[in-house]
Amino acid sequence: MLKFAALLSLTFLIPAFVDAQASLYAQCGGTGFSGPTTCVSGATCVFSNPYYSQCLPGTASASTVAPTTTAKPTTTVSTGPTTTPVGTTTVTSSAPGSTGTPVAGNPFTGFTIYTSPYYAAEIQAAVGNITDATTAAKAAKVANIPTFTWFDQISKTPLLGTYLADAAAKQAASGQKYLVQIVVYDLPDRDCAAAASNGEFTIANNGLANYKTYIDQLVAQVALYPTVRVVAVIEPDSLANLVTNLNVAKCANAQTTYLAAVTYAIQQLNTVGVYMYLDAGHAGWLGWPANIQPAAQLFSSLFKSAGSPSFVRGLATNVANYNALVAATPDPITQGNPNYDEQLYINALAPLLTSSGFPAHFIVDQGRSGVQNIRQQWGDWCNVLGSGFGTQPTTNTGSSLIDSIVWVKPGGECDGTTNTSSPRYDYHCGLADATPNAPEAGTWFQNFFVTLVTKANPAL
Ligand code: BGC
Image 1: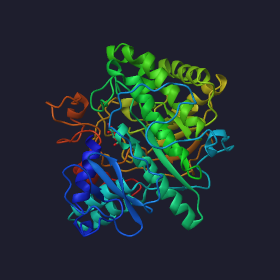
Image 2: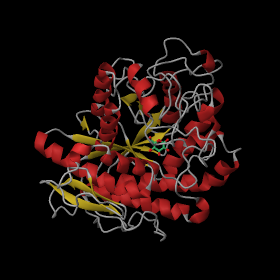
Image 3: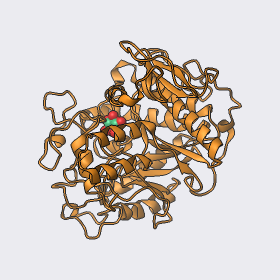
Image 4: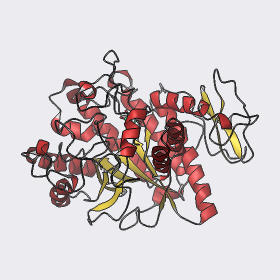
C-alpha cells in the first residue's frame, strides 16, 4: 500500500507527462483520478486495481497484462502444482517454462539486467528536488543501475507482467537477452522479529491461502513471458528469523506457516523457470559460529523436502543490509565473529551447504555498503546514517561462489519510519546511527538518498 501510494504521487510529480493523452507508464484511470484516460500511441491503458490503471507498452489486443480482481483475495486456493492461477490469465501445462531445466552455470551471464521504470521514476522525482547540479547529475545516474523490484503486496503482481512485457519488447528490439530481478516478499506475519515491514497478510486471517494466491499470480505472469529470464530473491529475513528468533512469539507462531509458504513459493516458481536465491541474512546474523550450521541445515532440509527444485540456484546475502563484501579491516562492532564480512560468511557457509545437498551459489547485495564502520551495533539495520551506494552490480565478483553483486534494496526507499506513533515503528529506526525523520518502509526518503549519492563508493 505504501509504496503503491508513492507510485501514485510520483506520477503527479512529473507534470510534463500530464497531457491530453497519458504517457507510457503514467496513470490513466482509477477511483478519484481526473487525468487523461487514454494513452499515447504504442501504449494501452491497463486496469491494475480499482484505484489504478496504467499506460503499458502495447496495443489493446495485448491482453497479456491481466487485471487482478481484488487487492486481497479471500478465497482459498488449492496447493498442488497443477493449481489454476487466479485472475483472468490462464496458464496451460505446456507453458514453455514449465518443463525447462536451468542452465548450467551462472544465470546472470550473458543477460542485460532490466531496470525498473518505477525506480527510474522515483529517481527522476528525487533529482528534481536536488538543487546542487553536481549531486543531481550523480543522482540521475542511479536510474540506470539495476535494482530488484519488491513484490511486497499482492496488488502489485500485475506490475510483474508489465515489466516482463517491456523486457520482452526491449529484447526483441535489441537482440539482447533480458533478465528481470524480483523480490518475493509477502509472507503472512512478515518481518516477525521486527515491526517496520509488517505486511498485509496475517496467519490468523487466511494468510497462507492468501500467500498462495499471491504466488500463483506471480507465476501466472512469468508463464506469459517465457523468453525473459526472471531471478528472484525469496522472502528476505524469513528463514533467518527461524534460525535465530524462535524466542520471539510471533516468529515461533509463524514457523510452520513460513516453511509451508516458502516451500510453496519455490515449488511453484520452479515450474515457470524462475532462478531463485533464498534469503540468507548476512554475516552479522547467520554468520556467527553458533548460527551458521543450523542455518545450512534449515536451507538444505527445506530445499530437499520441497523436492530439490532445480531452479533454486542458491542464497542471497546482505539483502537491504550494509555489510562490506570484503572489509578492508574488521569493523570493531563485528568483534567475536570470524566471518566479519560477506565474503568470509559465504566461504564458511558454502561447504556446509554443499555437504548437505544445497546448491552453494550466492548473490550479495552491495547497494548501500559503500561506507563502512558507521554503525554502533552490527544489528543496526535501519536507514544507517552516513551510508553510501556501494559496488555496482557485476558478475565480476572475485569469487566463483558469487554469481553476481547486486542491488536488491532500491537505495532511497526507506527501511522504516521514525514516527513513534506508527504501528510499524521499530526502535532501530530511532537509534542514533539511523537517519532521522524517516517515512514508512518502502517509501521515498530523500535525505537518505542524497547521502547515498554523495557518499557513494565507488563514486557515481
Ligand atoms: C519494505 C517494502 C519495500 C522494500 C524495498 C522493505 O523494507 O517493507 O515495502 O518494498 O523494503 O524498498
